Each structure stands twice: as structure tokens, then as C-alpha cells.
Image 1 (tube, one colour):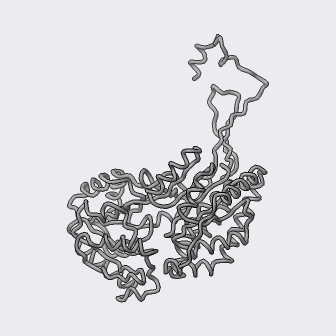
Image 2: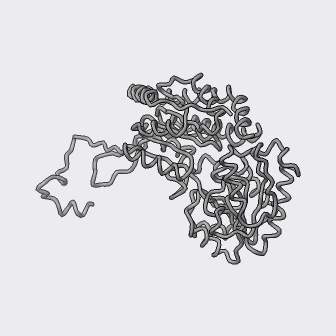
Image 3: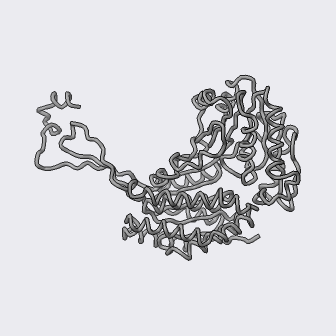
Length: 461
């Protein structure tokens, strides 16, 4: 495996200083410039599409089909969305003004925050690096990108792509691991966008507090999947298996565990087993559509989680190939290690309940998840959503809320802070500046001491 070298502190300081200088020229803030850079980014992605697909296969064994659907296409469609709407989003927004401020007018101006730092994880190493970048470009910021060293082939390919199309004082890539992260986080970035674990997210937030930098944290957690009576079992099984096994379960919004009504458990699990075989065949390790675990450390952690409960389906593994078969585990206890951490792999523990109140009570006893999925009657699903909190949710589906540009994406509590996608990405890297414009042809005395018209002022306000 290719090893990623650390970037030294002086190099990082120089890049940051150069980007600060470029931002002060205001060149990045022009709407025409932003649009041209978005178009350039699209050209860069299309030019390097084949190599991106190749390195995603190298690092994660992602098929070209999955690479396109879950990484490349998401980026391209996000760019198109910003190109279509950027002028409207960036236009000053007039808002109403209360009578007390007569004859003033009010509006909101959207200005870029400045220089952004975008730190990406390894599970979707292309999409989760470039998608936030679109919002940074759209808002008028400069950006330093930090790919994950755990997906080294992707990290180097992205660096090559960015170098070929952008000047480093506007947009650049910095390589490295923990040491490089520490050097980066010591810089007074205007905004830091981090995607990764809650543990590292706390470190990022603490570092950002030294400079009071804005922070967007896209984290994870244990996203529950509730399957209730009234669910279409065949459809539910297919959508759950699909959502769980994309990227071999290494997805922050994958269904982490099942909460299944006792009376339908057997039918559902039998159907999930059948669906898995339909998608990947009986010899799953031979399927070109089934990804691999990112590295040996992640692989070994997942093997430890397999020790809980009893395996109903799957359980086979090959450490040399970093292959873990899709696995369903029953007889799980809430204090088992598999229920105390985000699984981030192709293992699906199953817990049963009798009344739906038990399901959302269990969810509420734990940290707020990044996503929540419910299969069953739509009205009952709305009840579950009203009784629980999560970053996002689907009723009778999994994952798909991420595909709508008009929906904000992000976590709550331990699963993250801040939203992005579509207009929310533009806003994430922007300062919404409140402006009041007051004419001088009249100067009402109401606000001035000695407050001769105080009784009138009280009536107005």
C-alpha cells in the first residue's frame, strides 16, 4: 500500500498565508469567478473520472458502478445544482423592517467566510472531500483540502487532479496524518469542515475554539432501523440490505442495527438473507460489486464485534483480502460492545420489541443518531419521528435522504453540528451579514435622550 508522508509545519503556514493573501484580493468573491471555478471543477472531475474509479477500486474495492453512484455522480450533480442556483442564492435578500426603524430598509448580504479547511474521511474519500469544496467555492472562499491517508491512492489522485486545474493560493491539497492535522488545526482558519468520527470531531472543535473558527462537523453514530408491523417485508428487506451493504457497511448513515417487531422478525431476516444472495451471489467474496474493509485495524475491530450474540447468517472472513461477509447477529444485549460503538461494517445486529414505544424508548436512551429509518405504516412512522431526534430520516427507505439537494444533511448532538448539501453548503461557508440602510432626509428624535417621546415610543415598539 502507498504510504502518505506528513507535510511539514512551514509548508502549511506558507500555504495558509498565501491563501489569506489571495482572499484579500477579493478575486474569489466575484460571482463570475465562482461560476468559472465550479465549471473548472466539473471539468477536472470528468477529466479524471476513470482514474478516480481506478483508485476507489484500489483502496476500497468499489466497483465502477458503485463509485459512480455514490461518489462521482453525487459530486457532479451537486456542482450542477450550484451552477443553476448560485446567482439566486448569492443575491442580497431584502427583509421586512419594523415600524420603529422607519424609514430604514433591511437586507441580508452573503459574504464568504475566508479560508476554509476541509478534512475528509476514508470511507467516501472522493465525495466527502469534493462535495464540501463545492460549497466553499460557491460561497467565494479559498480552500485547503486534507484527504484521508487511509485511502492513499484516492488522496494522491485528488491531489494530482487539483494541481492540474487550480492555483495553490486559491485551492490546494495537503497530505499527511495526525501530525499534519495538528499543524493544520493550529492555523486560524475562518471555517473548518470535518467529516469523521465523533472522537476526532471533539479534537477538531477544541482546536477550532482557540481561534473561534466556525466548525461544521459531519460525524456518525448508531443509526437505528425500525421495522414495524405493516411494513412491506420484501421491499423493506431489499432496501435495508442495500443501505447496509453499500461500501461494505462503511457508511456513516448506514442502518447500524435493526429494531424489529417480534412477530415479523423471522420473515424479515429470511428475506434479507435471500436479498443478499440475489445481490452478491452465494460466493460473495467473488463478487466484484462487494467492497472491502479499508485496512487491517478496521478489519480486526470488526472481528471483535462478531463475538457478541449468535450469528444467524454470514460470519465468514478473509483477513488477507480484508473481506467480511454480510453478517446478521441475533441474541444481542444492549451492553454488548457491538451496541456501544458505531459498527461501520457489514454486520447487522437485531433487537426485537413488542410495542413501538419500546423502540423509540431504546433510541432515546442513546446518543442522537445521524439517521433514523422506519419501515411500516406512514402515520406510525411520523409518530416515531416525532418521539425521537436524528440528523435525518427516511420512512420506508434507507440512505436516500442524502440524494435530495433540497434537504439539509447533517447530524445533531454527538452525530454532528451544521448542515450542508445544496443551498445549505453555500450557507455553511458564508456569513449572513445583516444590514440596515437608513436615509438622512429625516431623523426621528424618538431614540435620543432625554426621551421626550418615550410614551409614544413604548406604544410603537
